[in-house]
Amino acid sequence: MIAEIKSYFTGYECSRCHKYYSGDALQTVCRDEDCGRPLVANYDLNAAQLSLSLETLRNRSDSMWRYGEVLLVDPSQAITLGEGLTPLIRTDRLRAMAQGSSDTPFHLWVKDESSNPTGSFKARGLCMAISVLNSLDASAAALPTAGNAGAAAAAYAARAGMDCHVAMPADTPQTMMDEVEAYGAHLYTVDGLIGDAAKIIRKGAEEENWFDLSTLKEPYRVEGKKTMGYELWEQFGGKLPDAILYPTGGGTGLIGMWKAFQELIEMGLYEGSLPRMYAVQSTGCAPIVHAFKTNQDRTIAWQNANTIAPGIRIPTPFADDLILAALKDSGGGAVEVSDEHIKLAMKTMSRVEGIDACPEGAATFAALDQLMLQSEINSDEDVVLFNTGTGLKHPELR
Ligand SMILES: Cc1ncc(COP(=O)(O)O)c(C=O)c1O
Ligand SMILES: [Zn+2]
Image (cartoon, rainbow, N blue to C red; front, top):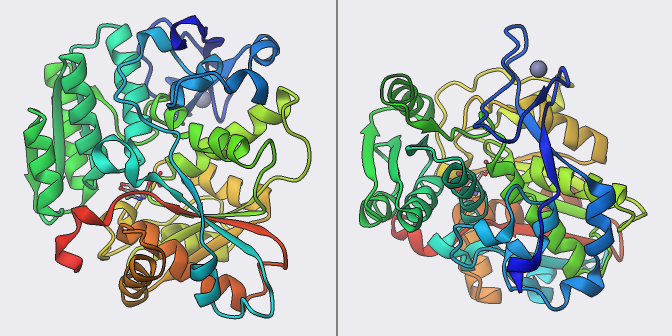
């Protein structure tokens, strides 16, 4: 079934200076020396809309490749492990635990990404990236990671028969290091943060021709992550929720979903208001929250970043401007929560709904209390929390 769907990808464009780049060669960031900002993919959406609809989706594969018209390669070329189409779970008992929810009844949903291959939403982006690298004959994939992206890259590279190099902080949960090695990738650890891990990858890219898949320094991963936006639209029956709470590190998922919503509008598949996007970070590393609250369009590097949620321990998100623009344009915001509150939220989600959330996912439930206190959530609204991965990778937090 998926073999019949055709991609309508046309090429890349710089997110800042709008210069065009070919889709037939490997691309990184804008090569204009005064620019260097992320590239974004374009599609022939007029053509895509002729075959993409709620109706036609009904008979398609149970993976993110069901949205093949708006993905970078034809689904027949995908290096796939069945990623995407994760459950959207209505969580009434959890909602009742949120502060003030009896006065302001709303509908709470958890988009549970833990059922993806390698146990996190990183599967979507790395599936897409490795599929593109494979189609353009890249020799090796490489990336610095907070853990989950490395595990996903290693798995998809194994499936493609491609070499893979993964660098991460030495204090990353052991489970994620074990995953990378189990998939046969080369693991490098550094005493430091993700920026220090990135130095190893940059050196390998210069000297050994590894392809550097650092967050948003290539235009591929975001196109896989955007399928979370398409899924919400499909799972809400052609509608979109009112608010989305997303644990934000490098911001790929948030930027990707925001892009998906614009594409849906352009294809005439959605009209109406767009969700308010809320970035959730830890008080131990909250560059986006700080920039948003002080009305800046770029972040300042966060000093001494420290949190139990490794995926949101990103002191200098490269695409900070795109994250902040999405928050602002959507009428959303940014919330920071303490590690204590995150731990408590993990326990609550497990005990009240049977959802074993990763700390990053649990942070979104912790953030809900603050949004309620600030009267950001209104009666009858649909509110979606993103649980981006499984709690099983975090025995250290039990
Ligand atoms: C479980 C988890 N949640 C959230 C994030 C942040 O993702 P993004 O780069 O899309 O902001 C990560 C990134 O490592 C992660 O592993
Ligand atoms: Zn540019």
